[in-house]
View: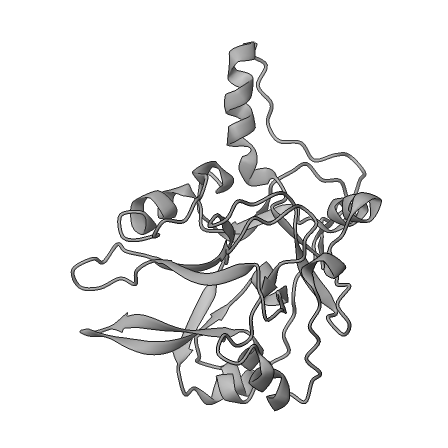
Length: 273
């Protein structure tokens, strides 16, 4: 986890305006702050052997974007790094434009999406928005994310699928793991458990795509019929994380994954330094 370190206990505050703000602007300000809210959060999963999982921090409509991965890296589809490391658990196949044609690549997707547990009847689906840059569209941008397959209520665990054709059986067999089918209602967090976990585990930082990239590089190409309120993206792109709320010294900013991969394996690769 990350925490904010400081030599005193003073609350870190952003710059505040001293001008009078009329009442009619409150709705606008609320919309502007949507990117600071907790759409999803990580917490201990109630799924047997599930470790941690990702949970809905609010209600989502069917076909609404649930998550946009803050970053992804592309690798050759037969890359030994993918086949022989923990990255094998976190990639999705996708097409990428290379020179004059599209080729199949393995996309390692980072962020909360790495914590999605498996369910043969998932409530979200993987989607790629926009398109990869090409000679004709050098400003295009392709990003990865997940869209709600149905309405999702706050507190529900977010489930992906580890295999659409066989319900994930091969994925679990290859890893000698038990495939447990848990109904969505059994993994849901309710009442005070939901409120406490949301308050404790919601990320206080923002990183990744903001409105400029979405409006100027993604939307001109293709996002399909997905529903998305652009106010849920930060006003600026943030390749590095920033705090989105006021924090005090010692505050845990985020729970996030840490993958152990051999340095010789990733050296000079898209995942390496």
